[in-house]
Image 1 (tube, rainbow, N blue to C red):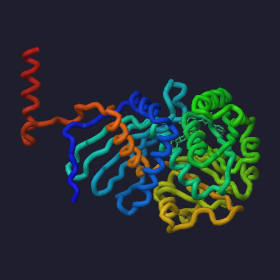
Image 2 (image 1 turned 135 degrees about the horizontal axis):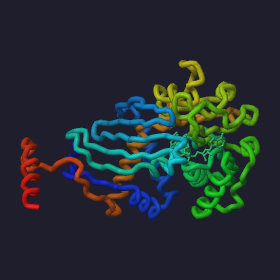
Image 3 (image 1 turned 90 degrees about the vertical axis):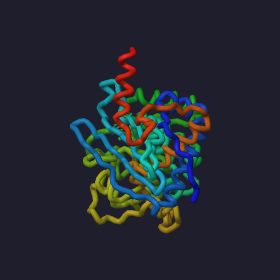
Image 4 (image 1 turned 45 degrees about the horizontal axis):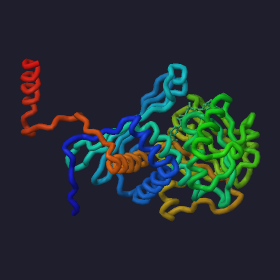
Length: 356
Ligand SMILES: NC(=O)c1ccc[n+]([C@@H]2O[C@H](COP(=O)([O-])OP(=O)(O)OC[C@H]3O[C@@H](n4cnc5c(N)ncnc54)[C@H](O)[C@@H]3O)[C@@H](O)[C@H]2O)c1
């Protein structure tokens, strides 16, 4: 069996360094790398001990813990979702996570995952769409132009060949921000159409990505606007009582999910009976279940975000940061000269204090 070198100190990557790493590597290459890492881990699905995430709700939002492990590594992510946070000057979604060694419990890596959550969500969406969207899809409607939107747009242009984006957000300022950021990422303004309604955005689209935030049941697109052959990538409905699609539309779709026990509680399918048929993404990736089988099917990826995506993302980020020399040592847990002499820490600290 391969023995691996275990660090004696936890490595840390903060938000600014994570952003530097993504900028240096390029968002497109990050999305490619993440899609590969996520696909590889979904392909070995049975290796993982999985559970639905643990959610704690308040009036305005939710805080969630997302653990998963295989024989070697343990990972968890902390993530929140508070759609009204903008009024406090805070983002809707913030995240951090850790990797630990299963054999010893040693925390190996602690990192900001806010930017990486947006990237891994978009990479997973594009990965699903490769199997579910009609081949030759070139136009995507994007409903919601907030924090996640640029990453969805980039994933679908970089990984799926989307050429045209048709965007709608209730707040026009977010569409300016989106166009400006996508211009910086090399997507010309001529490829982006700002729309006055979701109906207008869906007109001529092959793929529809919904990425809105509201802690309630809403229908951000109308059933009547969805034509046979479309693929829907529904990202923003990801908690109990928080949905984006009308139930009549769900009844017309072939539905694909990450982890059914979690999605049945959190996804669009919470609106359907508990035994409504769904296919699992990992089975499609491994060829055990079909993806799209007919051009006129309406396919739906009911994305809620699953811990395995963060497991893959943390390992990808750790390797990238290590290779770039960006990891910082973090005094997260003590390094003891004698592993059974924890009290020594108190004596050493008292000694240091007395000399200060
Ligand atoms: N599935 C996943 O893995 C995953 C991962 C991360 C975030 N999310 C979810 O994605 C959503 C978006 O996150 P964000 O960080 O971009 O939020 P955000 O608050 O930055 O942006 C949300 C945008 O949606 C717009 N909006 C709200 N209702 C709308 C409507 N009916 N029509 C058009 N636009 C509307 C708002 O004006 C806002 O600009 C959240 O609900 C979040 O929980 C899901």
